[in-house]
Image (cartoon, rainbow, N blue to C red; front, side, top):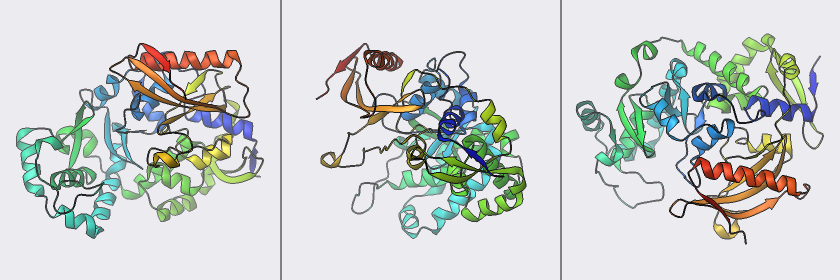
Length: 388
């Protein structure tokens, strides 16, 4: 019999699964948080705090920005590579990632456009410099873009560094003020980790199980998209071989529809162990794993959300960098913020309460308290409502 799960339980399940059900307090274990999530997406934009820092802070507000750099650099307990985007991944997952290095290398090798631009990079010279000089950033090289410069154009040395990074020849050794330093993988990843020989099929099996475990439910497409390290056929074959160890479910969306999915075998035990989501109001980053799948977000919570950083200003419905507001198991609004670090101020540019939510004085106090915590996190002294 197919297990049917009502929407209220699905919301609770998802928030527990993604680490947002509990209050973001208590003892801090950054590596454990990353392992539970699977990975943390990196992002260059420092609107208030960069996405990777904000994601970790949302789960425990004792987190501070230097902590992730310490894990990547001196402590060497995580590595950096590509899931659906550049991400921080627990180092113990590295043996399951060798297929991703091969997969991305083959993809780039098949790209005639990339290869034509890569031809201007001398990979041997780049690698030799790193071998002789130690970790180098892209700023240590000075090759120039050939031909017309376009929005996403990269100089030859940057293409070469990225190609060898995707292929696993180079690894990120550390970051300084978010500037990435490349080094030989043999000098970054311990041999005890790097030399584990896991078969391709065992990697696929692990990736699929680990994805479903970290989502608690999903379709085969969801499982494929989680790490973006497998192909459609890989996941289909995994499902055929492991169907007996999975649970078919139907889950209810916020508008009452029922969708088919699969879940881990222990889904009923997971449901029984769920805790009620904290009533605390949270300002979530647009790249938070709980809301990254916008379709799932809409189905679960009825919250229609899009990040508009690449939308021309005149066509934006909301704003450039708008944060969803989560209270308990409901999204109650959205807010546009900007940090003015020179002035020591967190600016509230716009605020949109959800039309179905009454913004009482108690709820407004919750928002003010969260704004104060976010400002403190990035060492800002005051909050300025510049709302139009």
